[in-house]
Amino acid sequence: MARTNVFKVRLTDEELEILKAYAEEKQITTAEVVRQYIQQLKFKKPS
Image (cartoon, rainbow, N blue to C red; front, side, top):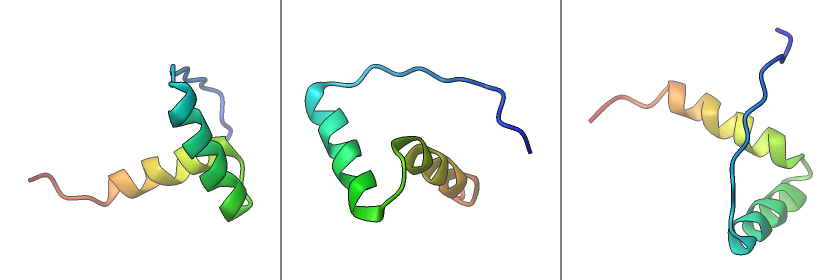
């Protein structure tokens, strides 16, 4: 599926550093971190 949508989010310096560090540790892009998290949300059942 083609990715045609863009989503912007404002982060604090600390949040951005956490995101970058996690992505670097996993050797993926920061965008892929967000995509993977969103995929996990699909499988969580509502409380």
